[in-house]
Image (cartoon, rainbow, N blue to C red; front, side, top):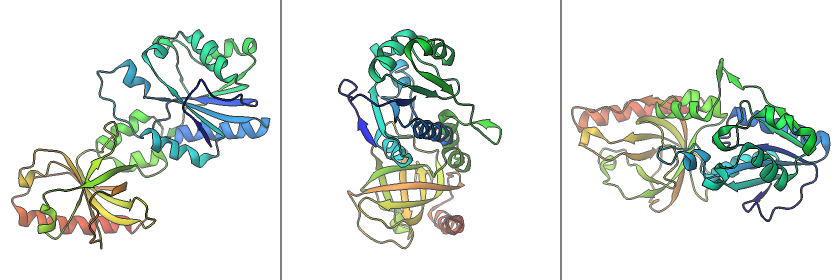
Length: 311
């Protein structure tokens, strides 16, 4: 997959089959669109082209809202590479771009830059200033600009429309099962292992405290999770458990993310660790003291092992 980050230097694409969107999460609904993109491309003998935006449009249009994202840009690129797309364009989303009318978006951006032969869009896709453009507008100008447009149906899982917002809400409430099912993979994030107060080590549960690389990356809701993890530059997958929260038993006040890897005893400060959520174990609660917490951690470990044994 070729990745273009400058829309002013992109090449001419041969019979471009295009889809456009933010694709935050690259979830099962997005995957359905991509499958159709590939199928249309193969049928026509052209080139597949996925156009996404950075930063997320909502961060530009609504800067006062604290939008947390399912993927960093590099994570999204990594996920998209798996599907056999020929070309990925990362278009900069600016205030000026957001003010284009829907017709300017079609003429100056979509047709002017990419000259699509086929356009595939997701259900209820909107574009242009005030989101005034939609499938009907694209279809109305298809003959004029020489493209064909196709709108995908809603993607349903258990009778609910899959959306990035729905997945964000699931993760924030600790609903790992729903999030992973609708993503089509286990939710993940990466952080650098930093020095902590080593409180876990005193109880026999040493943890890697993570400093998350991207401030816009969504960190799941507080609680204890069963996880798998991999150190940057290594292939081995480790099993473990993770706590996200303030550690109320020891009067913590700052939210931290800490991972205890099973059967692991190495100094990994300064290394990057990627963590995949596999199951939610329990809420974060305040215990009567450290002995009660230690006993609960032992129970949590067994619960995590039981969850992870089913992988």
